[in-house]
Length: 285
Image 1: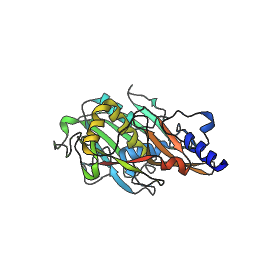
Image 2: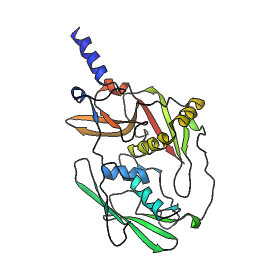
Image 3: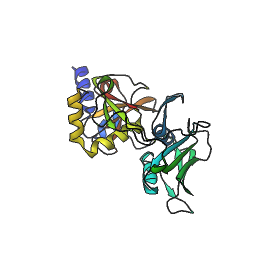
């Protein structure tokens, strides 16, 4: 009877649909600190746990002599600055720096608060270039040495997106972002099954948060897209598994995101909870 009562308590405390209470923090808690390098990395070029190339997210290599220089076409400088800031984790602090009022500098830290890299966003007054993103060390970020924002009118190609928003693709995935001028399109897959293991193929926290931002802009429309495609259930106040985890207090804590809420990410540290969560994959094109 005591064992049954204990299991019931654990399952109740791990319910992803309820707010976290103090007594639940042994099994579940809110994620407030991120690996800021990994977060930015996976918003530009996604890598696996060994730093190997997985897929390109933002930026296209237009210079065949250096494929680590990535270009993006934007309408104006403000769009470039907003896009850059959108790549940073919620806990990253950004400082304005001279000479331009829009120039930015930010130090990227790991989960322990140790500085790993310094990133600069600088205005460039050389048409068609509007701004550049560079890195102080140049060795921490993988497969990218510089991001160059150019005017979209100077973009060398005008190819149409391979998929349009709402299109159903491989394995019941749905297109939630179209590709455009150096910005990759996004295909979101929601599993119809739960699992108790994390994989590198699950969505990175970076892309999961981008997906949440996109979906929240017109939630009901995307719900209908997934229902029509038979592509898994897109539900409010539900946590979905990502590939992110951290090791704290001798326990591996796995991250899951509520796609319907802004910046609502929790960690889970026991099998009972992890088996109750569905997982998501996001592929770029």
